[in-house]
Image (cartoon, rainbow, N blue to C red; front, side, top):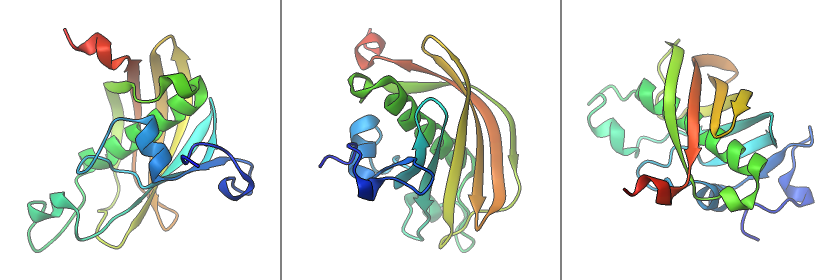
Length: 166
C-alpha cells in the first residue's frame, strides 16, 4: 500500500482519512529537511485535515534557532500549515494532482501564542474556506496538547511543476 489508499486501519473515528509519510511524499514534492509534517489525520476532502509534526531536538533549524534555547521558528509552523493544506488539496482534487507545487499567495492574521519546543507534538488543523480555480484559502490553527500555539489565514495556488520552468 502506498499510504494513500483508504483501508479500515487508515480511517479515524470521525470517518476521516489518515495518510502516512509515504502518502504525504507522494502527494507533495517536499523532502528533508523541508518536509515539516509526519502524518495527516482526520482528512475530509474539500473540507479539513490535521497535520502532525513530532518536534525533535534533531531538527536542523534548532542548530541556529536558538542555541541553548531551541524554539521552532514561527514561519516553519506556517509552512507546516501550508503542507497540510497541500495534502488536503491533492486528496480533494484526486491522484492526478499529486506532486504539484502549492505556492503561498498571502498569509494574514498570523499569531504566535507560545513557543514550540523539542518534545512537542504539533497538531496542525487546517480548514478550507474557499477555492476558485487554482487558488485556495485556508484557516490554520496549530496546537500542542490541545492549546493553540499559532494561527493564520492563508491563500495558496496549486500549479503544475512544468509551468514554473520557464
